[in-house]
Length: 159
Ligand SMILES: NC(=O)c1ccc[n+]([C@@H]2O[C@H](COP(=O)([O-])OP(=O)(O)OC[C@H]3O[C@@H](n4cnc5c(N)ncnc54)[C@H](OP(=O)(O)O)[C@@H]3O)[C@@H](O)[C@H]2O)c1
Image (cartoon, rainbow, N blue to C red; front, side, top):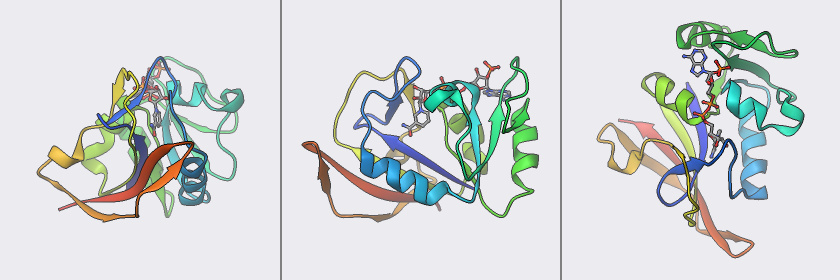
């Protein structure tokens, strides 16, 4: 199973339920890599999507403990249930947020990481794979720039 995330310099991923800095190039890459797949997403991240609605052209597997059924999505109530549901699809990608990344990381073999060279205050983090012995950076794009911000696309794989 794969995951996709955009991280700031300190591997922060968000603050107060949203991403303080986003790039349109990253949104495009996110769409390209997730369309046609099943995406696993936490209820709080879903709430931050436009209109709080599931993403189009993807099977949305939404994790919630206390929430009800989400229209247009498959609603699951535990990590085990999310994993069982994900197995029904050819491709499944974990798309966050922080709590979902953390719980499902043991089941993930590849992470698409967009690294943005900026460090806004974050209250949610992805585990720093540069300091994780079990992971290797298997590829990276050249440095690119958008709105004065340097960023690059990288791929980490489990050793
Ligand atoms: N930079 C990026 O690429 C990226 C990507 C995605 C998200 N984010 C950021 O990440 C932050 C959100 O992360 P978060 O950790 O606060 O929230 P989250 O992981 O999106 O959602 C947490 C919610 O998911 C449900 N949940 C989690 N684990 C569960 C389990 N084992 N069983 C059942 N339900 C479970 C619970 O929903 P209920 O409360 O309904 O029970 C929980 O409150 C935001 O700032 C967002 O912008 C960043």
